Length: 156
Image 1: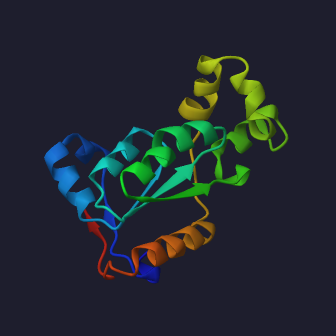
Image 2 (image 1 turned 90 degrees about the horizontal axis):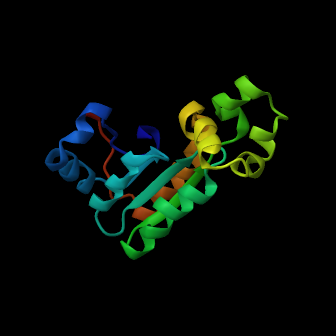
């Protein structure tokens, strides 16, 4: 992300519990990038006009759009989704490329929420194709108007 003009701030999971600190950090950002999950609720602290980029795991299209994508417009934010390809999911290694878990998530959801959660939330890890993600990040930069200066990566 630094290559396209962003200053990168990495937030570690343990720091998410300090609400005062995390709210100030997120409010200073032009773009928030994260995988689908509870941590994205920090979009609440983004300034108006910022961009939220959600990395959308396999099988979680509806939840991603409903819980995080939909609310962004009402908050005055831009929303971009980065839909992972099957090869970016650990599920391919476990089930194989042509398994219903990969090609037909609806069949897994038909077994009920617990079955779907066990696969798509609890069992799935994501390894983002950085080159593919770069396209989405460049679009985010265009949306915020290059207002974030490049700089050294920092960590919270």
